[in-house]
Image (cartoon, rainbow, N blue to C red; front, top):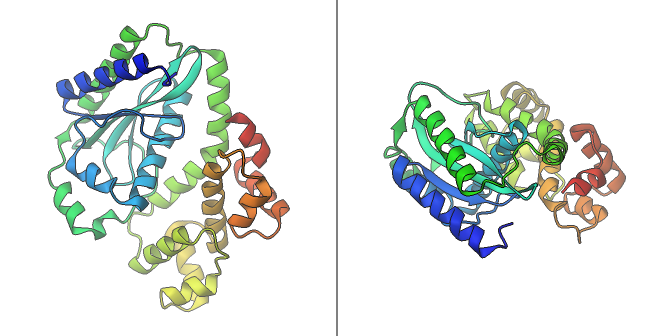
Length: 300
């Protein structure tokens, strides 16, 4: 595990050498998407992005979802992050336990786009990010795939005890991945609507910032200066979701990270998300993920 200082140092050295050889950024993250290692060859764009709290959280979600996909497939997986960059994730399994993920990339592929892992964010509203974006390194898709294979060989050489194909690991990862899959798919569905109108993008930002409140369609419509009936139809056509379905999807997504704090009761989480009846929250959670909040928590 990464409580072992020797393992941390060894992984840090591997990532440093890999980044210097390939020019790709790397970082080691834990199973919740939190950063464990130093940053290596991070692009200016991503470094600036992670100084902004709202985007740092989205970056960590991309890391987590990418890692879960890689753990499910039991191999490095390239994907497109919320900012449109190509990243790759590789699961790290030590002593039959998933302990984290190696994330690499922060490049633009010129000949192929990999599947999106999260909806596009509105980072382009920041001039400093637009300026840094122009300097992002461009590579072809095969370079990313080759780098993924080199990374896999390097880690298996230095950590021969890694058991990527452990049945227990496959089962645990599948459980968590299956629970979060509807939420990942929902984010991808929104991402596919490439030309989101500015007023709907503004509404989405408002919703995302107010998930702990009761969010009413009329209030959000007024926030973007639209008639509620027109806003409701427009929101559905732009996102692929009804207003209430989107709000509930985002609240349940937020609750996934809240459930990791086992000192927090499910009733408290429901109340913090604006649900006065915990039973309603539990019903929604199961409807969206296929599992109850308790079942999800037991898989962590």
